[in-house]
Image 1 (spheres, helix red, strand yellow):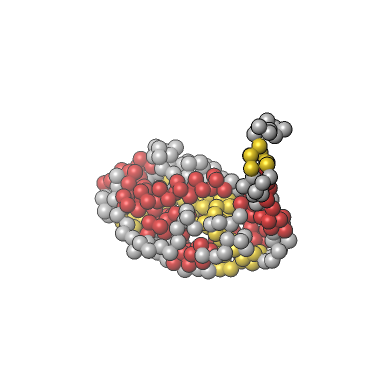
Image 2 (image 1 turned 60 degrees about the vertical axis):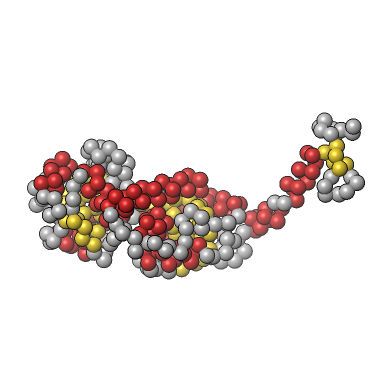
Amino acid sequence: MLKCRCGAPLSASPFNRGSRRCCCVRWLLHCCAQPLPLQAAAGSYPTKPIRFICPYAPGGAGDIFTRTIAQKLTEALGQTVVVDNRAGANGGIGTDLVAKAPADGYTLLMGNSGPMTVNPHLYRKLPYDPVRDFAPITQGTSYMYVLVVPPAAPVKSLPDFIKLLQSKPGQMTYGSTGIGGGNHLSGELFNLMTSTKSIHVPYTGSALALAALLGGQINYMFDTVITAVPQLRGKLRAIGVSGAKRASALPDVPTLQELGLKDFALTQWQAVVAPAGTPRPLIERLNREVVKALKMPDVIDRLATQGGNELVGNTPEQFAQVINSDLALYGRIVKAAGIQPQ
């Protein structure tokens, strides 16, 4: 029997009847022939402007993140990255738009915890699937919440606060920016882990909720660190933060885990994602550029120092794990809290 130089037996090739090639050669020919068009496309990408959809209105934290990253991608890729604000349905409208966009690397999404990991548990007929319909690129930021009470509140520690809530079941109130928001779910998780029952009072924004807290209409709230920091200078008292680590903007405020709530960990994020099926070389290119941008001093200043975020910049696989973990966490909170899907 004829043998290849590698020692493998030669056999008739399925690609060319009558010729004899070993299995190694057939495999090599097949593999080399397939990726060339994709490699060429990745090498020339991008050849036209990229649309970066922000599922929130201009001026907010999500918009700031989107525009900051868009500017850096424009500089790195040599093509304009255009920000397109598509607000509505708790971020669902813009998110769904990207889910149905061509998977060619020319439509990106500012992914956010709300539409991607909370909405699936709040809506019975969500038009997109956060796992099936998207290709993770990288998690850009992580932000947490801080439990705050008015200075006049008769508590100075977490045990004191829990005792106060337990002594008045169903009488204490906490504010949020709306049903399903991170501060609402932080409050529900706190109720569950401390065996307390406080009443949720939703507002249409953080400013209104904080005003109600300062005015005595509600008793406490979980607010984002960046929003709460200005109010902590004599107006509010911080008890603990919701993350597994202390917030860099509030280094003297312990985590709720440090204070005894061992498994309390709730953070949310901003990220960059693409439609499912986007070629892997394009995902890797975008990942490299966004991660690089997150290490730049001006980006750190805008998103971390001024924005109160922790900057991340992980791999697509690591970010996919975050999405799956948060989907499970919020599913448990929504179910245990009795929040009925709409």
